[in-house]
Image 1: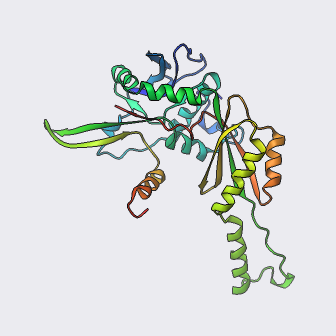
Image 2 (image 1 turned 30 degrees about the vertical axis):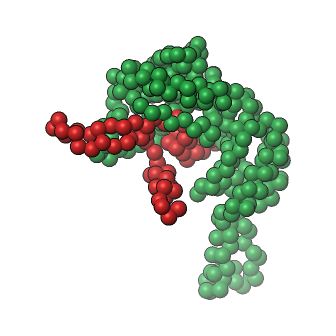
Image 3 (image 1 turned 120 degrees about the vertical axis):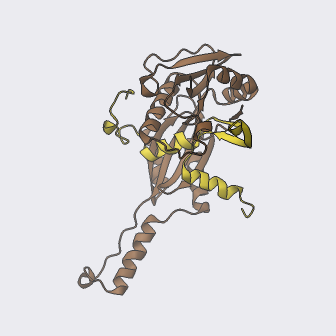
Length: 238
Length: 72
């Protein structure tokens, strides 16, 4: 029976009662050497071995449901979340996986047990179009079109590495009290800032406003409180 | 929001998340599993390969391939 893995925690944590697995399956757990792993059965999903040679598609709706399950766990207990699509062939294989990687799992639990990740999206504010002489407002002349295009590009320009460092340091300076680590990544929708924080902390509206004021040409959106996804580097071998 | 909430009612703003962020997070981060498997056809072992037991987004895969290339 295939298992879809959700997360690791220490032994003794009980499954939050409100959490249902993907496809409404009950969430179960296996405990081995002080490590607990939560999963549900997932027979309709292919294992990676079965995917080889076939085209695999990712169902966005299932991925979102998976996210909700993980967040449900995160709110209730300290966890190390699996990447979506971690399917293993049997309970025996899962026990063997824990056995073989026990030291790494404990190390990660010790490192991240009392932490959480707070993420922000920083996007450039759109540049305002310059005031155009009234007669040219509706002009399609090449010169006016050129200037319009130029300003549109300015409005969507991505910050360079120097700017990213500057943004990181503004976050670090204003939120350093609860911050353990910080990461920034440039993506098509903007800069994502991930803070590794002491657990149960999230920024106040005032703190977010303070950051927004410091980032004059950028706007800040708080994405939420997550398990320390971007800081866990745990690759288990079977 | 519980698991039974219909997806069409999923409101990223209300949940303080962006859909793309959720997908990026669950597909590109978290604990991964790697292993070695042998692919056999008709009882004959043909290919021995290292396998990453995960699904990932195409963009991430491209990015990883670029980072792994000798030119980078």
